[in-house]
Image (cartoon, rainbow, N blue to C red; front, top):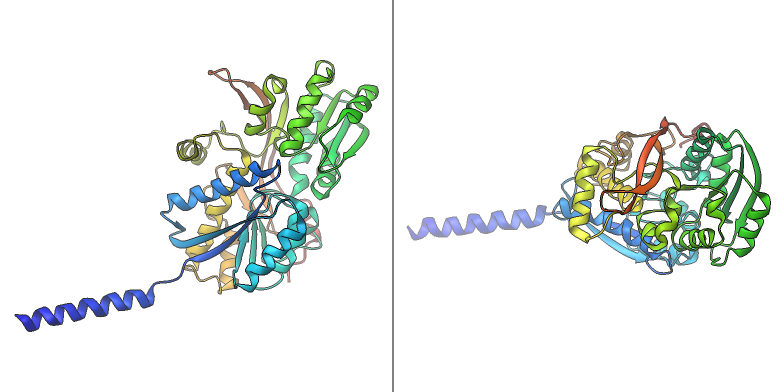
Length: 390
């Protein structure tokens, strides 16, 4: 009896020891994002959307245990580069989280040109979609100019013949206006570039008043967009010159800050909380329950990116040292995107749909982006022909 008990205890101990030996360390993910500055809520929403997918997996993505290392870049490229280099030196092999293109441009090459991977939740600088594409670099959101091309297509459909363009003078701003012009068939009467840290737009408002365009296409993310929208309304321009906005210039958080001034404006986006996609309905409900607020598109694309990464981790059983297998699994994009249609083009940037939306009151009297129609369907990336993976 005692002998059997002793043998049983020994067997249990050996089994426990074997389990511990076989247990894998969680896959560490460097999540570099903007959490400070007036744009900090963008990184906060991306972080929360990404973490929601992990919480739903009980600490895993694709059944593989993960650990996110969250760092604030402060919207400074040098900070982001320093953080990335430190995490690379600590043998982190998987990165995501960056919101702004100037930061991503500084850090992506040092990550993706080695044996580590970068998967974007937001920024998609156009050079990395074309001649500077990298085999370990994936974009789970969009190429910067693509959504703005949808803005150009929307302006055509709305019948605007003369449009003035406004954007901050950095990579994403230049990509934005280039994308708009790629699809727009009318006359661009002016391109006004502002500073990335600018808060007073009175000079631009005066110029727009003088130009008298049929419409304004304006791209300013986060706090910049809030200030622009408020000054646009205060100037009275909203009564005579309509605006078309990319979602970055009027997301759900910005709607709360700008109030009635956004009512009736048109936006273009790849996602809305009202998008009729089963995975989206579940995501919006879960996000609201977890965080007590409506998600923005930053949270939506981050949530999709987390599940995209999870699909690849599952395929390699968490062993991302199998770089070829992990890359192949990423390219399959085997997950249910909250935005609906999603697959990768040959340059590892999305092929997806884009929508025209109008900011209108819902049943509770709150402004919400309602889908008017799809303006681009399964849009392929225009830079893929320039990309030669090696």
